[in-house]
Amino acid sequence: MTTIDNPYNPYDQFDQWYRYDTDHGYNSSGLLMRLAETSSQFTDNENAYEIERAIDKIVANDPINIYKKLKLTLEDEDAIKESA
Image (tube, rainbow, N blue to C red):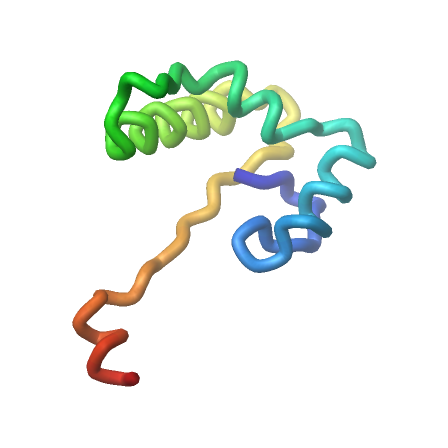
């Protein structure tokens, strides 16, 4: 999740993305953590589901349409092995 005006990619440029986000008063990470019902008792998949659910909720209920959901496409592990 990011804001439409943040020029940085949180996957590749997290430090710059985070600085921009907090400097502009969004605190997207804090908002996400307040809404995501994660737990150390949950599996990684359960926590990932909760984080995605919270992102969807933030984007859907954003009154000024500043948030957007990013999708990260991962290469298939076999394809990575083959290209190495």
